[in-house]
Image (cartoon, rainbow, N blue to C red; front, side, top):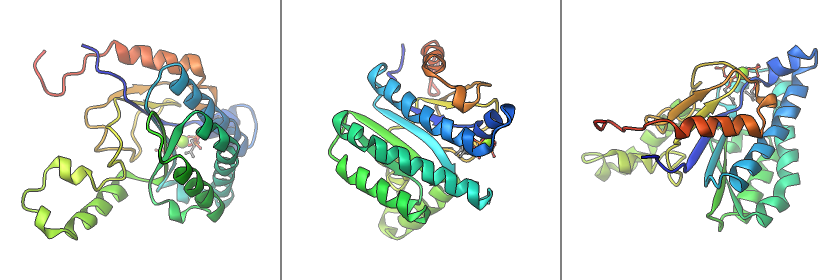
Length: 231
Ligand code: IPE
Ligand code: IPE
Ligand code: MG
C-alpha cells in the first residue's frame, strides 16, 4: 500500500557546475537555482498538495566557501523571500527554518523572522528552509537541551528525544531528492531520513524543472516501504 506523501526533502545541488558548464560565474548558478526553488515549491503545493517541502539551502559546512559566494547566497535568498512574502500569505504557506539562523546575515535573518511570524497560523502547506543546518550540530544541540531536563533521561525514547530536534513539528521526510549526481546526504536530516526513500538524479539543480520533480514523485509511488515489516 502506498504511504501518503507528507514530506519531500530536497538537496539543491549542482548550481556551481551548472554555471561552469555555461562558462558563467558560480553566482549565476545560485541565481538560477534560487528561482527554481520557489517554482518547485509552488508546483509541489499546488499540483501535488504535498504538505511539507524542505530545501537544503545552506549547510553548516558551506561556511568554508569564499565569503563572496556565501553573501551572494544569503542576498539571493533574502531577495526572493521578500518578493514571495505576499504569496506566502495569499497561498497560506507557513515558513519554517531548520538550523541556527541567527548566524546568517542580519538582512536574511530579519526577513526570515518576519515571514515566519506572519505565516505561523497556517497549517496546510509548509515550506521549510534548512539554513546553517547540519545533522551533527542538530543532534548535539538536542542532547544539550535534553540534559537540561535530567528527569526525562532514564526513560528517554525516540518520541521524546525527537522533540528536541529542529524538526520537532515536522514529519519525517518520505522522500529525499538530491540533484547533481552526488550520491550522499552531506549531513542532511540524517536521523529523520532513517526510513526515507532516496532519489538521486544527475540533473543539476537549476535544470530541475516541474517535469523532473514529477518523475521523482512517480518513482516514489512505485516503491514499497516496509519500515522493518515482513513483505
Ligand atoms: C548547491 O550548489 C548550492 C549550495 C550548496 C548552497 P553548489 O554550489 O554546491 O554547486 P556545485 O556542487 O558546486 O556544482
Ligand atoms: C549540500 O551540498 C548542501 C546544500 C545543498 C545546501 P554541498 O555541495 O555543500 O555538499 P558536498 O560538499 O558536495 O557534500
Ligand atoms: Mg555542491
